[in-house]
Image (tube, rainbow, N blue to C red):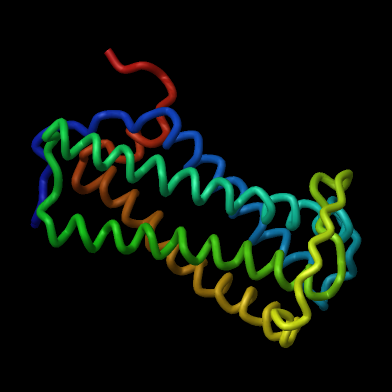
Length: 195
């Protein structure tokens, strides 16, 4: 039983939103995987990609994430304002508010994880490695570094919360594509021009 059926096919999202979304997916996935793998104490650290390379991937993607999150949030807000001005069809207000809140919760978690990771590294007086070449040394004031381990623990805790949120988000997109049939995934990941 369908509760909502799209009356019109979704227009393709602007290219800037699709590219920022794709970049955020790639960086967040790389950061989560490399972080969990690099800090796995039961792993020998030797494999196809060794521990030092995983640290570089983790830190590089973590440095890129705040820029992608802010860019995507701003681009999405600009697109929503444009949709309202153009009077494009939108969801009922309460559903729109709930979905927006869920998306911004995911973005807030991703941003918090990245900033806490940067903060934990800086509190430990360790440099951030961007692409393994460029060292970024951020020295946090001692008053902000109450407990570096606590910051790192919060970094890991929010990363653990992010995984089910991203899975729910992905499931929702698949449900849209298969059940609601409003071509949501196509509007996000189609890079070919529509006729």
